[in-house]
Image: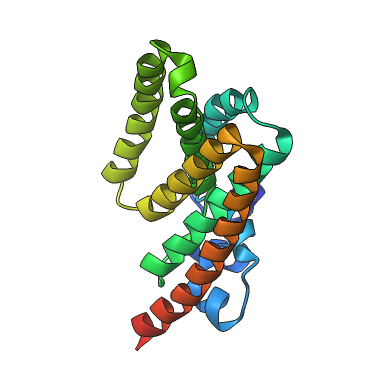
Length: 204
């Protein structure tokens, strides 16, 4: 909000300002080692519309997930999904500027799907109904992502897969969740190296 007003625009924010204040941008991340942008970019948005859409989505699905996981697991899934989504975005789009919490929010979506799948037997006939409800909301968000060229679907998909693994592992067994954390950390390290290579190839 402050950045939008300070820049003279309420709906959109200048890309240069976003890059300066912590957006994901490969030249600064790879060349200058500013990997902290993987976190800061999750709290920046391209404008008020972008921010409101993400916050409404987070409010809806976030409250649902809070019923099934601890605050610790919620935090791990949220940030792990956001970071993996950001790294995947850097790898696929090394010369683009990325901001937003969408990767993390799609991780929350994924976690809900993982929890439902893990409880399929226990849920009985309600399983199909629950999956239809989640699929409807998720489908709308995916459609919006595909319809608007500026939206980075790679971050969404990366967050969705990470969140699914987190929700499923947490529900099955707590030690599986620890394995999820380790695997996510290793995957993140791999994507760091891959992002470096992708950026070098892009600027040649």
